[in-house]
Every structure is written in C-alpha cells, then in structure tokens.
Image (tube, rainbow, N blue to C red):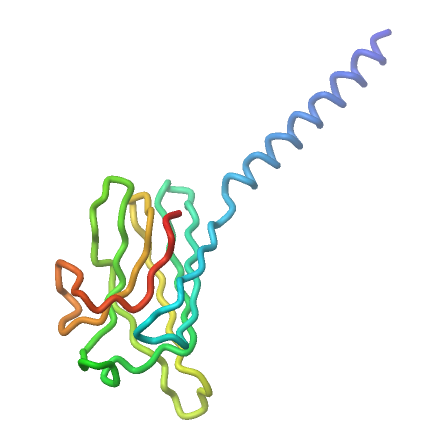
Length: 147
C-alpha cells in the first residue's frame, strides 16, 4: 500500500513539475511582430521581437532588410529614429539605426537591440534631422500593429 501511495505521489510531482515548466516556457516566449509595408520605402521589410527578461524588462530586437539610405529619401533626412509607444500611450525615442551598405552587402540591412522597462504596445520608425529628437516627425517609414 505504501509503495502504491509513493508511486502515485511521485507521478503527481513529475506531472506538476512538467506543467510548471510548460507554463513558464510559454510565458517567456518572444512576441514577433512584422512591420507594415511602407509607402515611403515600399521595399523595406522587417520584424520586431519583444521578450521579457529575468528582471521584468523588455528586450527589443529589430531586423530590417531593403531599408533605403536615409539621405536618399525625399525630403532627405539624416537618421532613422526608432520610437515605441507604451501601454500608457507615451511615445519614447529608443534609439537610431543606420542602414548597412558595406561593400559585400547585397541588401540594405539594419539591426537594433535595446532593453526597456516600459511595456510596449507599438514600434515605429521615422526619418529625422537629429537622433536626439523628443517628438516623432511626420515622415513615418515603418510601423507595427499594436501588440
């Protein structure tokens, strides 16, 4: 009888641990959001990955292909600025990106990574004169839907 109870206890413990592991792995999965097609740079394609880290911060990774050089836009600008919109409807400048135009690069690529404490509801990119601007301009290059 004791062997039967021990075996049942052992099976329930293993099942419980397995369930907890599955729930934790689902909770730590990254959200992958694709940028909408741009009317200004229609060839640009990209994605945003957002994942919560162990410190309850959000790790943001952005990859973009076919991003035109910012100087070639009409009107010409100096830098692409990445913005995030938070759940509280605050808009924050989280950095700048530069397109990769190396000699062996066949596509204009850009990558960006940052960490923020704010919960993100949307990411968008604008073309600006200065990287340290506090408010987004009107030249919207790429944007995501709401997360």
